[in-house]
Image (cartoon, rainbow, N blue to C red; front, side, top):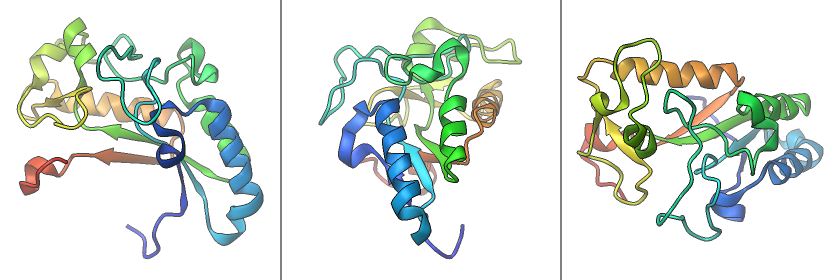
Length: 190
C-alpha cells in the first residue's frame, strides 16, 4: 500500500450499477484532461459490470441477467460494454484508458457467482465444478450475486487463480474487492 491514497474515479456514486462504456470513456477523458495533472490516475468500473439489466439507484435482485464465461467467471455485459464482445473482456477499454495515460481497474465481490453454481460450470484447469467449491456460509447479505468459495475444497484456489489470470489478460492495473475480510476478522457484512 502506498503512502498516498489512490486518486481516481469509481462510477458508483454517479451512475450506480448501470454505468456504460461510453460513460466510462467520457469520465476517463475528463480525468485525463483536467485531473491527471493533480495526481488522479485510476478509472475503476464499480459493482455489477456483469449485469445486463441492472437498475439505477439500486440493484436488480429480482431477475438479474449476469454475463459469465464457460468457466463461470463474470465478464462484462456486452450491452453496456460493447468493446468486450467476442470474449475480449475489459481489454479494449483498458487499452483506451491506458492510451490516455491513466490506469484501469474493476470492482469485484468475493466468491463465485450463483449463476456459475446453478450452471455447475467447470473450474478452469481442474476436474472440479462450481458446485464442488461453493458454500452458502458467510455469503454477502447485502448483495446476493455470489456464494462463498470454500478455500479448503479442491479447485477453490484454481478458481481464484483463473479469475486473476483472466483479469491480467485484460491488462487491469487495479482490482478492488469487497467482503474478503469478513470471515477473517469476524466483521459483520453491511
